[in-house]
Image (cartoon, rainbow, N blue to C red; front, side, top):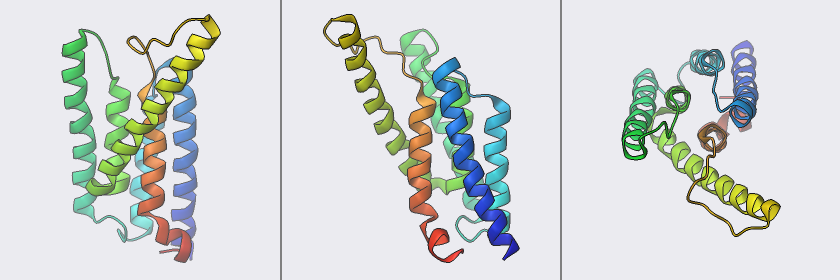
Length: 170
């Protein structure tokens, strides 16, 4: 019972941190290391409390490495292509922490959901900006932070991955 309560607190804390990270990224374009580390730490504690029921230790390690390395390679390619920072290191670290939480399979789902959420965010931002300025939408030079989209993707993949915890506590 105590371990289930700890796991539940970890899940709620993770959602709260993802919300705070999103707000911070929207305001400052930064994802603070301490908050990302807190999110990762809650993931480790969650898996310890659930006795690695949802993701085994190997999946935790592979997921963290895959999340970090995938985004790092995308960041390097985008930065080279655009000749400027196109994706921040905070986003890379966030997806590494997400992989720790989700394991490799659900991490890929989180990335797909996150990219879709970021695309929707960009479209809405482009249309709102155009309406406010009385111009046609221009999507060629949008600067939409990736963190909020990734947070949405992580939460959606987490709901999918941890659904049975919500129903049964394990």
